[in-house]
Amino acid sequence: MAFVRASQILANYFSPLNEALGLLDMDVTSIKLKSSTADCEEQPKIEWNNFDLSINFKNWNNQEVVLKFFDVPHFKMISSDEIAVTDLSDDSIYEVKNSDLIESLVKCGEITSEEQFQHWFIGFNEIGSFVEVVFRGFSEQ
View 1 (cartoon, helix red, strand yellow):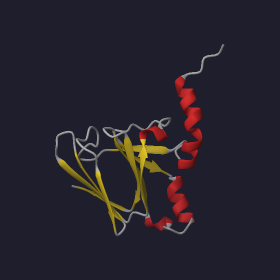
View 2 (tube, helix red, strand yellow):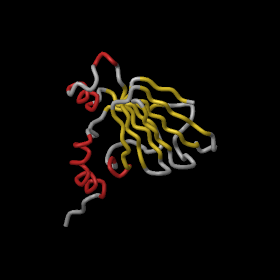
View 3 (spheres, helix red, strand yellow):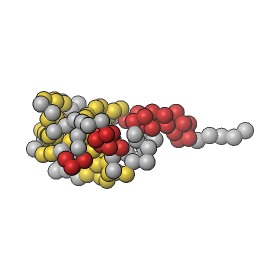
């Protein structure tokens, strides 16, 4: 009788979903901000208005933090379970290099390659979710 490791079962289960989400073999770099999203004290509040996205949350030290993303053609919430077989930790922020999603947005005419968009995953481990966002400008308050 052969034993199958739980990670292999999860990989087989989530593989089609990760492929559909474009999460296999992503080239990611960790991003360090002034304030960590790890252990935020409450659920983030997300507002999208005129293609600008604001994410408001209280950090582990109960300080109000606002992440502002400008010129946002795409964003979504993703449960940590949906990307369980990647190496992404849901208490960190990552930039996706050579993003397939950005390439798809260029191909469909939503953006142009000259505009230099970025693709990030922002992890909130207290709620077990990521915010995935494609944007052109960013500020942190």
